[in-house]
Amino acid sequence: MDQIQHTHVEVRGVKLHVAQIGTGPKVVLFLHGFPEIWYSWRYQMIAVANAGYRAISIDFRGYGLSDHSAEPEKTTYMDLVHDIVALLDSLTIQKALLVGKDFGALPAFILATLHPERVAGVVTLGIPFMVPGPSIVQMLDNLPNGFYIKRWQLPGRAEADFGRFDVKTVIRKIYTHFSGSELQVAADDQETLDLVDPSTPLPPWFTEEDLSVYASLYEKSGFRTALAVPYRSFAEECVTTDPKINCPSLLIMGEKDYVLKFPGMEDFIRSGQVKHFMPNLEIIFSEEGNHFIQEQLPEKANQLIITFLNKCSI
Image (cartoon, rainbow, N blue to C red; front, side, top):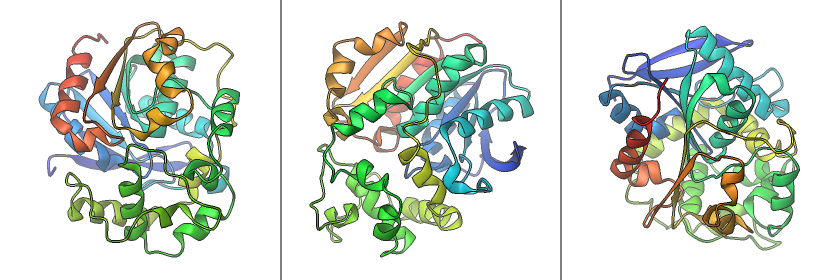
């Protein structure tokens, strides 16, 4: 971890926190989800650097050590995409391999669709092809009203839920909640974080030290941007109808990832429908993997990612 270098790079009026390790012309850019941060990729960064790649992991604007937008609540997915392009330009990187997890997959998909000349390959964990717009809105409409995504889309609802606890407790509860394999739905008189029993231990692969790192970063940034993107920007239309990603791509799904329980999600993946949008997609299921497979099973995730990267050319 001490070998990872940290800097800030100014792009589009904000300073992004950028963590880097490794050298060479082949660049792997890691894009985090929620409640994650650059640190979520700590194992993968070191592994791909040891495999000969330059590994870069950022905090999206409004997350961790990066600046917020002037109006955080108005941050959009396209802000994140434009930030990535500006960052690549600033670092004189013409083309990169993208690795996205959770909502971090969406900027990767958008970027690969709109700027294919900048993307050599795409790896996503836990999320198959989807982009903000009508298709996501329709899928979310089919989820129960007490499901966390629908709850947190409502202005003020998550703020009140989170505001009852300190930041470390919020992160602990969300990590525990998202580690399960089922869709957990709050009753009308419950909030999402109430679904987590305070006595539930952290997952064995997530230490108190890890939790402290996450908490310190979210104490700095808060949750204003994190609630805008992803949860309150899903209706944003970012790409044309019938988008395609033709570069080499890999989807890693844990069999115990709760996302597979989203309406139609498992069939969309297993039936191959997802390959309509990504014709050169390889799909790998991990039997024991959950929503945090890169932290839960880092050696497995590293092996899958590096094997894929070695097939790609820049």
